[in-house]
Length: 284
Ligand code: KIV
Image (cartoon, rainbow, N blue to C red; front, side, top):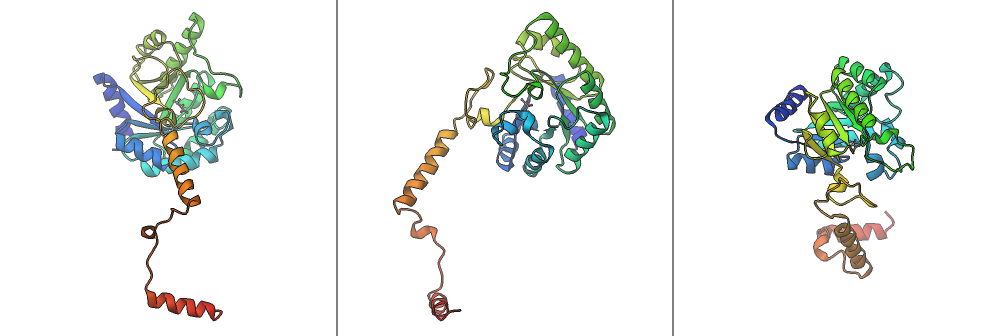
């Protein structure tokens, strides 16, 4: 399926009332898991800054770093739509910069679409990228790239003015040609009301049950992220502790002389070995 057909398919899912499933991925393992699980959209999120690269803020990840992650994910994803985040600082300053960066994500990493955070001037960047032929996903509500490092994230749209501002942002992004919008950390009834004003699919994260789809960060849902999770995270597995236990068991076996066992070693012909040892001893 082409990227255009995949985007049309998302619109079809919305029309049919079938929830859209999106998950983040950052490497070949998470990409293969997402592909095998049959999700609709895979996002190489700039959340990779935190969950994979160990930065405090998504603001710290560079284009080159996110391109490496995106290329790895591309190798493992063929069925879902592949969307890549444009990192902080790589698109805001001008339409030309936004188009240039989006082209790198398409041409170097093979992304089907890009995602950018915010509206206002950013909606103009979105329009320019769409006009350059690259599909754009918008992002409203909580915008991690707009948070000063160290500032705790908080839900958006709890007051009338903030909720109306989010509604306006979503409309601007739709008018700019975005094919879908992420709604992050917005009270459910506010998100529902705004989503209903849009013709394009909304994908929620902490935005209640009525957006057209849901997204979670891979490391949060499989239990690989550390620290306190956001309110909206549901853990479907807890893989961190079993992984620690596996490495501890390996360490104990190595230290106790129990690994490797004979079955883990490669055989060698006795004649070849004897000849090799003789020549090695002779100084060859
Ligand atoms: O970077 C990310 O993971 C995201 C999701 C929260 C939508 O933008």
